Amino acid sequence: MTARPFDNKAPGSLASRRVRLGPTTPAGGLDWLNLFVANIQTGFGPFISVYLTTHGWTLTAIGFALSLGTFTSMASQLPAGALVDAARSKSRVAGLSILVFTISALLLAVEPRTLFVYLVEVLHGFASCTLGPAIVAMSMAVAGQAALGVRLGRNARYASIGSGVAAALMGACGYYISERSVFFLTALLTLPAVIALLPLAGVGDVPPQATSSGTEAQRGEKISTVLANRNLLVFALCVALFTLANAALLPLAASALTKRAGGAANLLIAACIVLPQLIVAIISPSLGRLSETRGRRWVLLLGFSMLPLRGVLFALIANPAFVVLNQIFDGIAAASFGIMVPLVTSDIAARSGHLNLSLGFVGLAIGVGSVVSTTLAGWIGVRFGDQAAFLALASAGLAGTLLVWRAMPETRPPP
Image 1 (cartoon, rainbow, N blue to C red):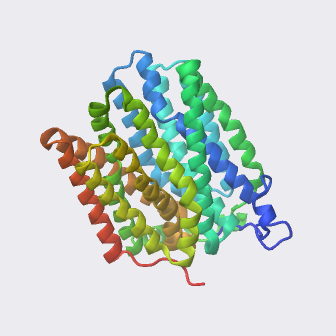
Image 2 (cartoon, one colour):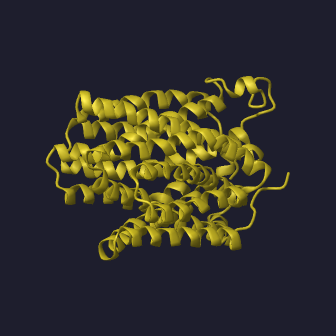
Image 3 (tube, helix red, strand yellow):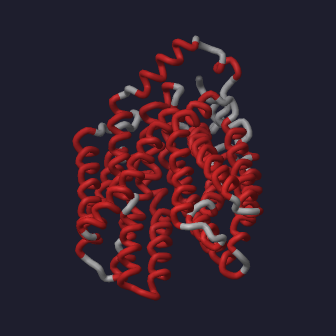
């Protein structure tokens, strides 16, 4: 099953620098789509916990609802990826996913009833798993395999800007208007996201004859071959170790910071969130270009090596200002990870016709690593203290870095 690429040799196409930056071209549409999708996803982040708390939800009830979303996302990775692979129109999949976000945000805004909140978590978890692969598929169709790293760098930059802007806007709405207004704003932001899809209509579409070619047995055998690919399995293990080392680092540091900084903790934690976003926005395009010129392994090693460094520094230095500065390394790791996950997966699986299924497989590994990270770090922190938890996470990061160094081959296609 082969997607129809955007013709980047035609007049006024991606080959033109002027058009590449235009908001009404496929490349410009991708820029704005990533920005507004990040806006929307920010609304489904920590603001949900704050909103439910103000409506009398207990910590246990909030934790159960958020866990339902996490497990839905993990369970949806493979079927959602397969669905995107099978869909003829990737832009239509993206549009329907954004529509689900609209409905979810409005359900939360109208009334945070238990059934509504659970339904929102399930819908949002599945729609996120279809939207991400659809954006990657359209990015590959617009840029081509040879320039995909640069394109993903731009995606990461605009997503980071979108997250930062949305956090500021939603924080202001929650403070000056009401917590409910955050979700009305989230629903409103889905409108420009849909508009950003208009230049992408037809990009990455699968010709009708491709969806009917081949028998079901051949497709099943091909899927099993793709998921058994050694490079894909090694990469999935690497990213699982990455999230195992990374997911709990900031929550653990925030908890320790709250104990030490007192009233200034909220401001410092906000800085810990914003600073990495700035770093991602600044360096992502450069990392994308580096992945094309020097190879994927160098960028992977750069990102992975930040994890043991962050963990050790968190364990050894408790100064609140330094804790914030340490988040610079988080920005470098996040930029590398955000670009390399879809890029390396594309290198491995793009020609198989099951790129999005492979992305789902890697996403499942990321989810498993994240769940284990928070559980393990919490248990070690209670039993042996925060310093031991930081060092344990740093050890997982070191293991991931060594695995990339020893077992992960260079996947960049030859020129």
